[in-house]
Image (tube, rainbow, N blue to C red):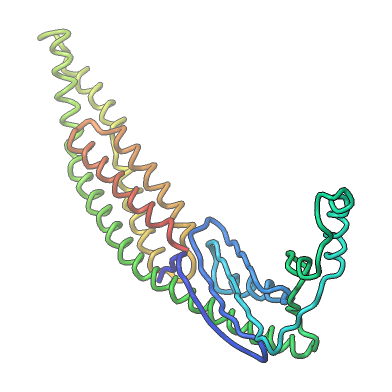
Length: 292
């Protein structure tokens, strides 16, 4: 069963004076990329997020965010005296020149960065316990994301099977139509030679030249390879584990053979089938971009 690369997972938790929510989301990506944003003072959660995502997913851009809040009873407030001194020093010239009044205490306390909430825990053991609880919620959010990606994969599987079946039908139709190419080439070349040489057109030459043209226009190898790619696509769709990269490569092979088929076509009916085939392969390619 395939997995998709887009989804969302969320989890909440609380421990001690702290409560938090974790959100994990992912979008398509050629490689595995993890981005994390968490509360200050909980640096070990970055590693937990990266290792958790890498253990569950092979591709995609995964973003994990933790919003944490400490209750008022557990929070601490401190005055940043260094920041106050910087503000006073910065405005000293204006005060001495009379362009500004001396700063007041309430004015200084209202400035950004002066009053700070201490977001760290004094007790290392308590902090470790909160971090461990947050890590559990982080894992739960990633598990929810994994479920969402699997659900997308189920939907993608159905779509891809339908598209591959359509490609298979077109390849078979192309094989039926392509059987008429040698006769059409001979008739076309014979008519052209008759226009140029009239009744003097040598039959032997017509046969030889038409046969040579038919060999160049032979699409049996392309059709055989396309049929093989259909079998390969079905096997990859049914396989376990990430197969998005291989499906993406197979799509390129599909398109290469379809382009050659169109270039060799001498019948409008075969050309039309080839164009339908290319359009269907493009639909396949668009869906494959969502596969892990």
